[in-house]
Image (cartoon, rainbow, N blue to C red):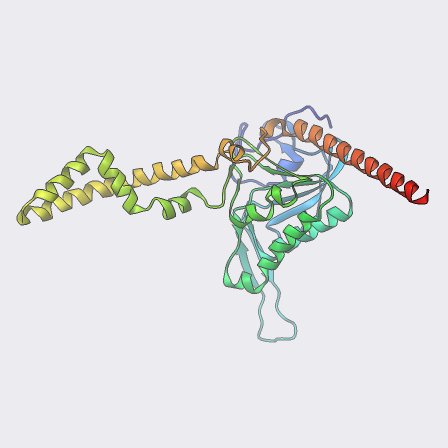
Length: 330
């Protein structure tokens, strides 16, 4: 499988998809006209592991230009988790629960931590295709030790010895606690983070930022400053007689309710501009913006360089230790 080729993007082509099997980003797929479109890794090289457990996370091994690597990424679609009946309890029943995609649940967080630990022991470089909105934070999740498993992901990355590449894919996002546990500053010597030009990253989503920092009161204040009709009605209300106040107040409320959805959308768009790749790079959160279409070529070159750098450092360390041993013998 040649390196210098485009990477399949399911959002484009004759039949673009918004909800799709995220594995096609790794493996590629046959498009609507019957032509094979390759994914990020070599054709036929991706082998998924632990696929029946923690299904909101996808783990496996693949090859990039013939170099074996480990892969971790989220499932984007909603999946079903089955809790079997307890054989020792005649009153128990099998239950099925839905788990949203792009979210770490206790089982999938533990699966992620386990996969990272295994891949580190195998000496594999690691690719994390990051598209998580955060951790599930319900009371049951707390009882099932989701915080513990989240910390195990951090511990696994801190101890990782091979290169780790975190990449936010097209239209992907990295939010909340998910950003915290895979932030490249956890292990800056081996971790690098890159994003697609359409990706977003930040602790809170734009709607959450607006609810905290630009609420209804602030929007009404800005409306009075920008909208001529609202400003005029407010002045009339301040100087109106008791008989006219109710009518003017109703006109003011009607105008404000008409404009509020527009101001809400503008505020959310403004908040979203703080999460674009240009801002992430300006704040030093990422190492660069890489277009998904040519990401295979970039990551192959970058992986070879990082592996060569680590091999050179090991040789230098071995020579240095040999020199020190010779001095002690002398």
